[in-house]
Length: 300
Image (cartoon, rainbow, N blue to C red; front, side, top):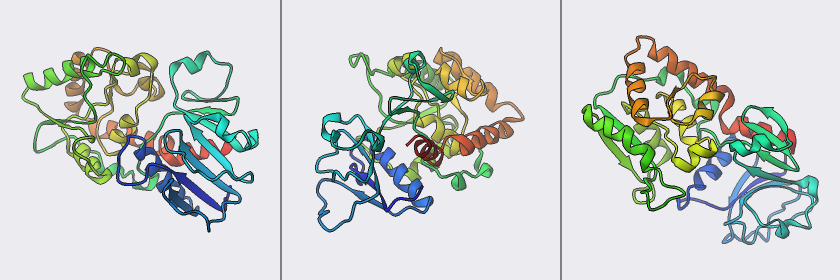
């Protein structure tokens, strides 16, 4: 499906919100598909741009001044529906991330992690790499420094809904006990580029994709998992559903102290590089933003 333009509306560089990485990845993937892509926001002068037959992607916190064009289609994430009431129903698609409650809805199953109904598509995010950028030769197990790398927030227990330290700490404590340093980068306080993140994870001794308590309970599938695998590291998770969609081939335990020891056991497996490459191939085939776009276009 070719559009006059694909418009990514909001969260332009520099990164100032976690959703910037989503818009970045859609922008990159659509360009790779040969689409004419513009990344705009409310500050841009759009008076001379023809938006007929365009495809818009936006999110509810950044859709101020978005052009409303009745010949265009809109992919909406957490937006106020009243704003788009003049756009025909068939020209709107609500995009939501997958969570386990979706399984109880009366929806069309596209695959184990993608469901569709009532003009809403539920699917996880993905790695920011294109399929052509996932090089199985980047699979790595040996590192010069024994470091566990965590790029992300660390929410203490007083943030009850979104705290994650109760899940992270047992894994990190085992790292300390076994002489493995922790390298924590919070992108909110120390911005990190996509390329730097890729290099850090590829060179990490361990790079777990551990869900906080709420995400674990809801079976939220973090993009961190897809990214870490695609960068050439192990797939380490405390998320049972994430393990399921990888056909139970991830390093999984709900107890993250036990998860640490399972990770070390896998690193000592003589076939570990072949294991990592198999997971990388799975992400390359099914969990890039090219894959997600193809699903969006099918139901649009």
